Amino acid sequence: MTSLADCTEVERQLQISKDLFSYREKALALALQNRSKNTNKQYLPKQREWRDFCKETGFEDGEMVTERKLVWFLEEKVLCRPLQGSVYKSKRARTDRDGNTVLQTVGKSTVKLYVAAVVDLYRFQKSRGINSSDHPHEQLRETSRTAQLPELFILQLSNEGPTPCWPMILITDNGKTNQLGQLKYAAVMRHKNSLLCTISHLAFYLFYRWNIVWESLPDF
Image (cartoon, rainbow, N blue to C red; front, top):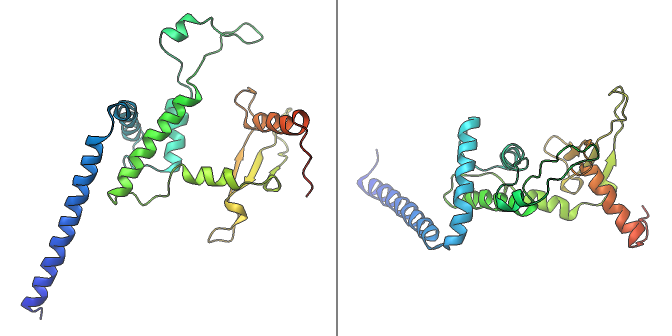
C-alpha cells in the first residue's frame, strides 16, 4: 500500500518535471523572440515551406527533421527552382549547344540558406526533446571530412543498355559496420548533364589536383 509520504514525493517530482518543461519552453520562446529580425526573415518562410512539404507528403512523424527528409525536400522543392526577379530577367537567357534555353535554377547560397533554416528547426525540436534523430547535416559533413580515396570505387553494371553504366560508391563512416556486420555506403550514378553529374565533379576536381596543381599521385 502506498504511503502518504510516497504520494507526496511523487507529486513533488511531477511538479519539478512540469516546472523544468515550463522553463525550457519559456527559454526557447525567448530565444526566438530575441533573435535578429534578419535571421527570422530568412528562416521563418523556409521553415513554413518545410512544414507545408511535410504536410503535403504525409509523413507519419509530421514536421520532424531528419536527414533523409531534408534531402527529399531539397530535391523536390529547392534544387530545381528557377531564378526569379529582375536580375534574372535582365540577363540574356543561357542556351545549350543546340540553342535550347537552359533553365537557370537557384544557386548554392540559396540552397545553404534552406539547409540552415531546416537545421535551425531541428535544433529547436532537439531542445524540446521531441526529436531523437541524428543531426541531419553533421553526418554528411563528417563523412566527407574523413573520406579517403581508397574508400571510393566504381562498379560496372552489365545489361543496362548501350551506354556503359557504372555507379560511384563511397564507403562511409570510416569503414565501420552496422549492427548486422555490413558496411555503410553511399552511391551516385552518372548524369547526362555534366553540370549535374557528381562523377563529373569529382573527375574535374582530381584533374585539377593532379594535372593543374601537379600534386603527386597517391600510392596505396
